[in-house]
Length: 190
Ligand code: MN
Image (cartoon, rainbow, N blue to C red; front, side, top):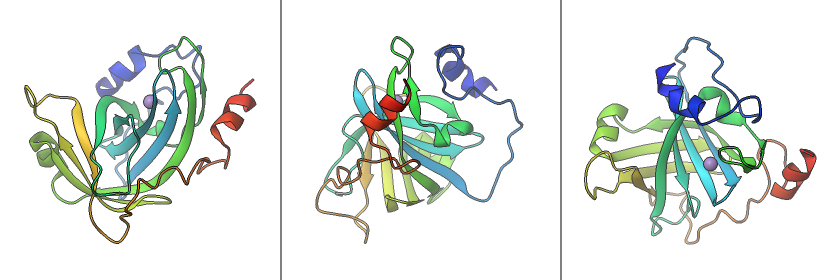
């Protein structure tokens, strides 16, 4: 799949245990997958992933998402990931692309509030999340500095009943998949 060539080219699948593209034809479903991974690599960040047309659109959020609508969190769009990445958790070997520890931090479904392609091209995506830890309405707003292909976006929580007046993410330091901490995931690998 062409959309995943950047993902594939960046990785050596004889070394990393991250999923390779499985080659299965894309089967659209009623609900779109959403996931967040906490990733401690050279730089610590959270990866937000939203399914669209058979891949996971991905943003690296250095400070992590925030439950507080006053926070505008930088979200740097990175290469599309295969759908099978949605529940990946593990350790990427040092020296490999993204080398470090990955925890599945949240998981569920998402829905764009309007035509996604139009919203993406305009640089203003309003969407809702139906996850375990994150719910309600969110927005991704592209920062237009030089041009529309800018990879830098802002991730903002909408002011709804799920909003908090603090960042709210540090209360969750364990995997949504295995209930392990970062150091437990790291140790289990060796
Ligand atoms: Mn990452």
